[in-house]
Amino acid sequence: MNSSLPEKEKLLSMLTEIHDQLEELETVLEASFSDLRNQMNNEELNKLTAPVLRLSKLEEKLDKMNPSANETNLEHNNSVAKALKLEMGFWLPIEYE
Image 1 (cartoon, rainbow, N blue to C red):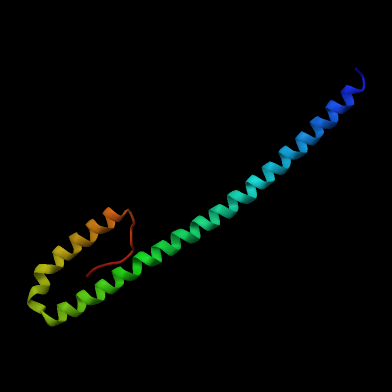
Image 2 (image 1 turned 60 degrees about the vertical axis):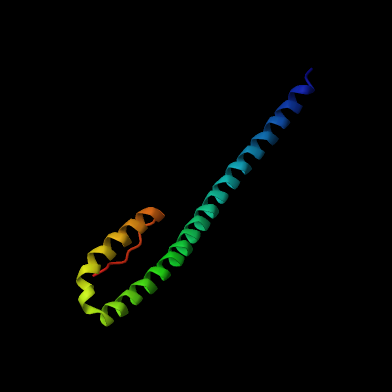
């Protein structure tokens, strides 16, 4: 009976060490995944921003070609752009003037 007590303490010590190592691993993984998540969010934002910028430039060219339609289409374009941003679930920091 006395010999089993040191074995239990040794086993408990080993389990405690494993638990501590798992906690350290959890912290490292959480930081790593957080960085990866931020990087992926930035990449997605860049992928979404580029087409919006191209569309904006095309709209500007069209406005220069057809200035009379500019005033009537400006309000419509702003509302459509806002609706698309909301529908996509992203806020893109692009201003339309």
